[in-house]
Amino acid sequence: MTLPRAGVLLATVVLALYAITAAVVLTTPYEDPIHVIARLAALWGFLALAIAAILTPFLREIMKVFGRPFLAVHHTFAAIGLLLPTLHPVTLAIGAMNPAVFVPVFSPWGRFWALAGRPALYLLYIAFAGVLLRKYIPKYWRWVHGLMYVALLFAIVHGNLLGDDFRDPIIWALFNTLFVLVVAAFVLKRWQKLQKERASGRRA
Image (cartoon, rainbow, N blue to C red):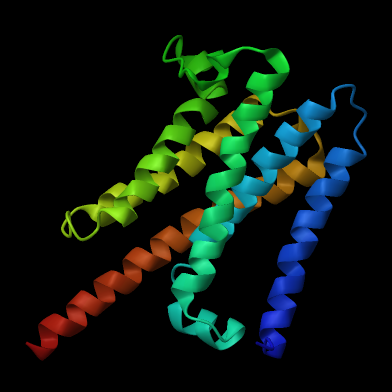
């Protein structure tokens, strides 16, 4: 299927974000290639999840831009955002030969936030399960799926506190801006829902 011009432009922007991120990571001096893979997986995974979240208030627009249903586009980014953050601790565990990277640390408070990527991974899978169980928990699946926003919060804090690449001003500015846009999209989505409920109430 040929993408509309707007779709080509948006796809180019997304690819550019991935390319910029890779360029920063690959041009930073490193000794362990496994660590490079882990860093790329974390950053690219966050990028995919952030894009999936940012697109949520724009269901009709995404259909026009990509010429495909919103869910198809959203789920593509979400799938990437599920795979790559999983690859991040897996590669670290293999490199260190230590599965402790999967174990959340809850105290002290500062260490919890520095290692918040660990619980973020579990929250991400719970959020994904919410979609799979939507037929069984129709009233609550959106709340469960909404844990993705908490996972993104944990991930961005983890990156800022512990991520090697967040020392680079480009990565710091890009990923923190993405998180701000995620928050804005969340607020916009809730505002759209409120407006829809008010409109339904007036018609009733």
